[in-house]
Image (cartoon, rainbow, N blue to C red; front, side):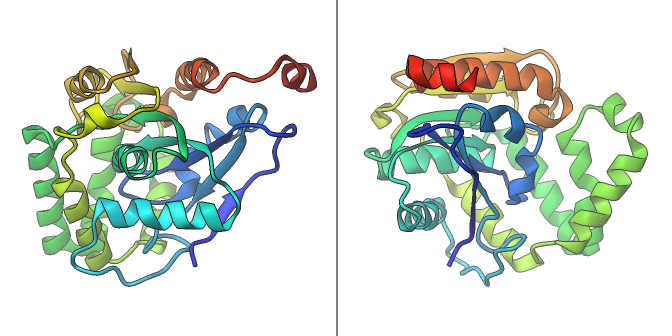
Length: 271
């Protein structure tokens, strides 16, 4: 059974937000956002199946629909039937899948550096990373990962931190086969024909200097969704919620306030 981390609600009937990480799958990816969100929302995070504290052997035909179904089932079993999905990259695709497959449950979407269908540049990046995995194993994958996540100078100024992150990533590596199955699910996902069926509001958030997913992918996603707002950060790389968390958190909270209005009585309790 999937283990969810469910924070206490800051006030009765606080809206629920579910944090969905990218290919790494770990819930701690959202640590820079959790304190800001916890003051206003009931926050749910988790390690995706086959990653972190949720070990499993994934099938070769693993799909985005299966990922979404697993999360939906776990939330339902926890008594959570209505929530806003906040997803990064693969997590954004999961959010789209949830909104399409379980529209009655998804009150809103925050899609960070996501896409409708895989961009040619992003495909090249993932193909290169996959070859590194085959040739050099977990060490090569982990060594290359920050290059796709963070701006160059940000990395250069934080070398000790990155070394610690590398060690943690190696210690909790999800396994070659699981990673390849999850990567296959990600690369095969295509929402280009279904995005118009998403009924909930969405905040589409991206960074202009994302090396892995060109920001134009978010613009295309925004144009395809019926009810969405596009916000482009000038800087931050693929992991902009980590590198510039202050700017990101402000944009996130402002966007959620529009999608998930809180009653005046609840506002007084927060104050």
